[in-house]
Length: 99
Image 1 (tube, rainbow, N blue to C red):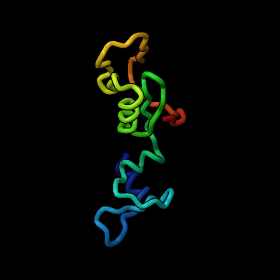
Image 2: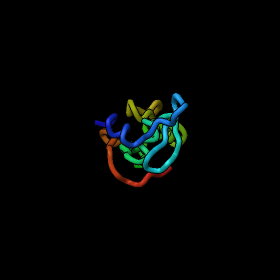
Image 3: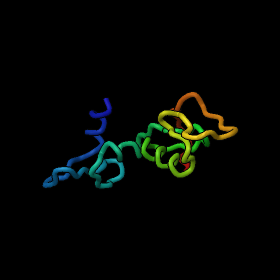
Image 4: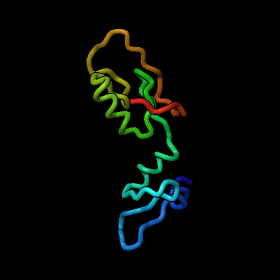
């Protein structure tokens, strides 16, 4: 399971309640679930321009700035736009991250 794998990937820092060191890169983090996705990404793809992100919140930020009329999670346009080709679902893939 993912939680078992995260325990193998991070060490809790002694004397700190919420700091963990990543065994893969040495980075000290407070949110291990977010950092976990840096090394073991599930990819979130923009259905409008195919930009990919390792985290859903980064996809949401991308859509807010690059496609302000589109909500990537409801897959709906807030106002009519011409010639918008939307894929049927967000895909999980291994393409390179773009902004």
